[in-house]
Length: 236
Ligand code: NI
Picture (cartoon, rainbow, N blue to C red):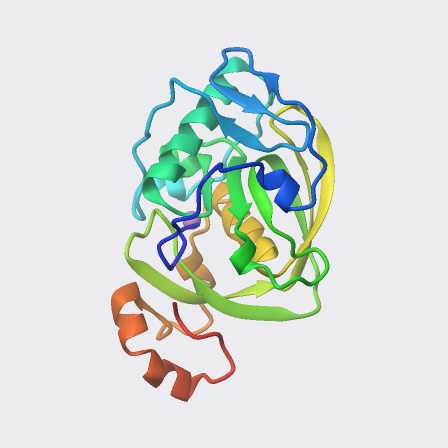
């Protein structure tokens, strides 16, 4: 998922886990030393990473159902995650799914910057984390519309309805299963990235095709949009 507003957050700055109120644990070295993975799934840069080519909308790798990861701790998965971190850092954004770098496997990386959180329960900041083989249960209650972007659809943004709350069961990069309840922007990012693993890009989720366009134009004409849709967040 791309940050609609340029995301200049330090990707892996000073101990984000601490500021997020998450438990901090000693990092252990990966098999190749390409990345280090904390027990909470936080990913850290180390060295030897590469920027991968991004697949753009129209490429068939973005349209298929990705295959499950068989061994989350395999060296090739660590290498892929390391390269995805580098790629996301270079492109700017809050999430990147493996099919977006031409690898049809069920994993993504994502983060939730503090400024995108509401302070509500299950809507806390999240340091850059790996999510492997996710299974989502959408809360069938409230749906929220908000503006999304995607690194595979550069320069565009659209108003996408998403479940306000989800429960996700998945595996960390260290191979630990976890279950997480998420709300707000966190829930939105998880749904956007999991959609990538099922070959779904956000334009397919639009409720109103008029609420889609070049980000610069949408922001430029946001007063018109807000006049017709005062119920939705202002484009950023
Ligand atoms: Ni995306």
